[in-house]
Every structure is written in structure tokens, then in C-alpha cells.
Amino acid sequence: MSAISIVDPHLHYWSLASGNQPWLENPVPNLLGDYSPMAQDHLPEDLERARGEVDIQACVHVEADAVDPVAETRWLAEVIASGARLAPDALVVGVDLSHKDAEEQLDAQRELSDRVCGVRQILNVHDDPLFDYVGRDYVSEPGWRSNLRMLASRGLSFDLQIYPSQMAQAAALARECDDILFVLNHAGMYVDRQHLDGWRAWRDGLRELAACDNVMIKLSGFGMLDHRWTRDAVVPLVWEAIDAFGIERAMFASNFPVDGLYAGYEDIWRIYLEIVTGVSDSERDALFRDNARRCYRL
Image (tube, rainbow, N blue to C red; front, side, top):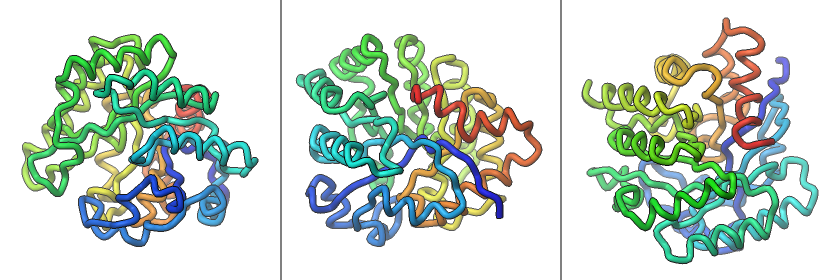
């Protein structure tokens, strides 16, 4: 099989010895299912072994729900300094924008590494406890919104992890903060799959977000909500997302090692390639490399 050349704009590393990811040290089944196989170190050398025939030209580390985001970035700066081949080329760091010291949290991380390019704070809320991440509507809080605005002056993007029920609110936020680039994570996390209304909420929410020029989408995380996902199951999701955002604002990502619970690293990328068979060379390059480089300034 021929190699696939990619830029991976969404992966995670961690070392359990740091004690910074207690959700990994003491796995409790959630929307991921039984994720205990993931409860081990995941380092650049582990990705090197897992990548198969995938040529990873660059990669973006996204915060991994660390208790202490500053300590996470300090550790990642050490990983980068070690010269590991698949050390992150860019960092999307964690910051709790509801805290009064959010600016200090962010600037401390920027001092630790010049590869900080954006921020993520998980925002998923859901009536079902299995799917609820934070149990709090951060976006409606004035203090949170005020702290979000500081990203613009620092030239940083915001990775937006939400459910379809939150998309209208997020689109209003994107229109209000039109000087910030928002990156919708995991294809918008189509979670409510038992009824037609769930599909409509996801589809229509994508369109409303896509109407904002400052929003891009990452096509990833399909295994989190469909643990037995297949190419055929994902095709309509990918096509709908690309149709909404256009080739120029969409990018594939692995969400590894989380999605490694459901498929191998190379398998994920080969399925993506099959899904877009027939696109032009320039369109394929955009989806697999160029858009990620532009988004995260690689």
C-alpha cells in the first residue's frame, strides 16, 4: 500500500506519571465506552509505531483535559525540546475561560512554548449524563465571553467542542467574535441519533455555523459516538459537513489515541481517503494537509 501524506490537526499525548489526567488513571465508562485500554502513556514514539504507512508531516496537540493545563504545556515543551520526531508542531492549550486568572493561565503557557496557536475548553452539555461533559452553559456567561475575546489580540484560534443543540448559540458567538477563528471539533458531534430531529439539529446547525466565515470544521472523532463505525456509516456525515463548509474550510484529523479505541491510525486515514475518492489533487491536499497548515499557522 502506498503512503498517505497528512498533517494531523488533532491528537493527544500524555504521561500518566504526571498525575494530570485522573480521568485516565481511574476510567469510568462514558460516551467513549470502556476506554480503559487507553489508560497508558501515549507519547510521540507510540504514534511512530502506530502510524503504519501514514507520512505525518506535522501534527497539532489538543489539550487532553488536564487538571493543570499549565503543567501539561510545560511537559509538552519538554517533549518538543527532546527532539522527538513526532513532537507537536503546534499546541492548542487548555484554559478555563470562566476563571478570573484565565489571562494569566494563557500567557503562562505562551511563555512556556512559542508553539501555542490556540485554546480549547470543552463545552459539551447534554441532558443525558452519559454525554454531558461539563454540566454548565459556559457560553452564556459574560465573564467567559469576555475572556474569550482576549484570543483575538493574541492571534489565537478557539477549538469549539459542542453538540448540535449548542450550535445556534455558538454561531451567534462566532458572529459576535468575528476576529477569532473557531474550529468545530469532531464534525459537530452528531449525538442524538435515535430520531430524525437529531439529524436535522446537526445538519441545520452545521449550516448555521458554516455561514460564519470564521468557522472551520475538523472531520474526526467518528468512533466516539459510533464505536463500530464503518466507511459507509461515515460517508453521509463527511459529505454533509464538506457540503456545508466547502473544501476550503474542512480538514481530516485522527483524534488519536481516543479514536484508536475503535480503529487503527492508518485505517482511519485510509477510510478518509476512500470517502473522498474522486476529488481533485488540490482538494485532497487541502483536506489532508493544506487547510490544517493554514488553520494552525504551521
